[in-house]
Amino acid sequence: MNILVTGGAGYIGSHAVRHLIQQGHKVVVIDNLSTGHREAIAPEACFVQGNVSDENLVKEVLINNSIDAVMHFAAHIEVAESVEKPYKYYANNFSAALSFIKYICDFGIQRFVFSSTAAVYGNPVETPIKETHQRAPLNPYGKSKMMVEDAIHDFARAANLGFAVLRYFNVAGAHPDGDIGEAHQPESHLIPRVLQSAMSSQVVLPIYGTDYPTHDGTCVRDYVHVQDLVRAHSLALEAIKPGQGQVYNLGSENGFSVLEVIQACQKVTGASISVEKYPRRAGDAATLVASSEKIRNDLGWKPQYPDVTTIIEHAWKWHQKHPHGYALQNEQ
Image (cartoon, rainbow, N blue to C red):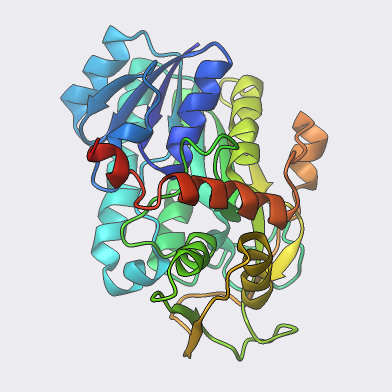
């Protein structure tokens, strides 16, 4: 297939691009590089710099490349920032996505994979969380993703759009060869921040909240390897039928607290990690653990890297090879 990947210069998008190419697909990337990295995009992909809300650009890409399917990753992803700057998140994650979906529907695209989030669930009533769990997001990030989910269902009815909505839990790790990985600026995700602290004794790791109703007082999250995540996208894409859609959780079904992740990182790196405790951040749920039973049963998906230690080992390899992220490549 000829597949358009938005946000293909980002962390998850770049891994998806590489995986799709390895599967034999032709891939075109649209990314404005506001947070992504040109160096992360596989050289075999066609890259177009721009915004998904640019109607002329999107339609030109669709026509010139005979696009058959779309994976939409482009979005702002920081929970705390979304609380402080809600307009930024509604404008980019919802409004721009809404326009983009209209453009692809006008073109006749019938295969659409949407990058959503477990943040749509808010504080879960029960765990592990199933796709049927009520959605009650705690922050504008989760709300903006939920709004797109609702819009996609309406486009499916009106424009015969086939779709898969994939709700991520905590994505982590890197490609096992260490060539591409996670490099946000600034970095807010736990595992890369812990590893940055492991690389430099001058970097103190902040822990936000130690009084949650969990076994050690810190947040509990379900970590899924980025390679397992992108394999799920490929399986979901192949299974899409016009006018029909599915919603799938993507997680390992195992929960690890912040303190447990820090301990695992210390074991992998052999480094002592300095921490400093802070109050809770606004919009953070205490526990988010997935039930991924549905995608396992429907599509035969099974994580190849379910162990958080392996996830950390692959991330550590990336950080060791690229201590300054993609900036190191820029200097060469």
